[in-house]
Image 1 (cartoon, rainbow, N blue to C red):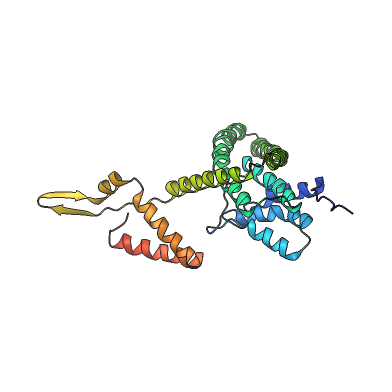
Image 2: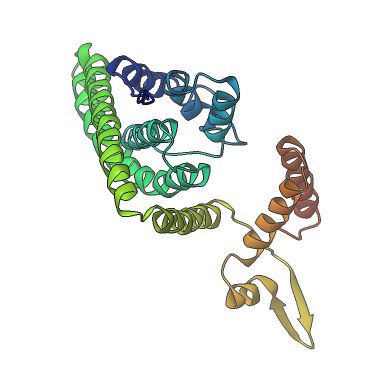
Amino acid sequence: MRMTERKTLDKVTLRKSFLCWLFFLQTNYNFERLQSLGICHSMIPVLTRLYQKKEDLVAALKRHLTFFNTEPTWGSMIPGLCAALEEERANDQPISDEMINSLKTALMGPLAGIGDTITQGLMKTVFLAIGIDLAIKGNAMGPVIFFLLMSGYAIGVSWFMFYTGYRLGKNAIQQMLQSNILDRVTSALSVLGLMVTGALAAGRVSLQTPVKFTIGKTAVALQPILNQIMPGLLGLAFLLIVWQWLRKGVSPVRVIGYIFAIGFACSLLKILA
């Protein structure tokens, strides 16, 4: 009896995936799913090599079109890990959609924090200081030096993180499969992913009310009372409303329109600030 040949990712496929990530991650950045199209595009070389059936390829593409956002250099570990997961899944290993998406959601926040701190806060500042110092002294190579330093750093770190993610992912997945702890890891990643999503929502959705009312001779502001109940209560309530709209099938574009209209009306009536 002939055994099924194992599907593997070669160097050319991984290199294409990395280059798609490097050059096109943010070319279609949008407010609905942020970088989801970018990471889906970077996974196309991997998916087309692993899945020959059209329905499998379509399902895999949809799997990578969920909400995604991270810092590009350090976050390049995520497509490397996803490539390793897809490789094992294509070889009939029990890798679920939930595990892949939970891993992406769990890692995108922490890696964005590391990347923003080191790349945007440290390295870019240092490279800019070098380039600007040269430019102020009349050296035309200042902008060129900055471009070369920043590009070399971004390409080098992205390359290292992408292949580190692929190697770590492959080894970790094989160990998990052998020790049968995949369900527990998936549950842990789901919890971590929800925490990251909650933290993102709490940090990005800022909603306050300037409403004040008078009880007797005392003026009472509503916002401090809400803060005592739970900080960010209004933001959470509004987030749940938006979530309900999306669950009922309202299109994201229409939801954005609702948010704009409600925000404009409440601001005009001085209900929200």
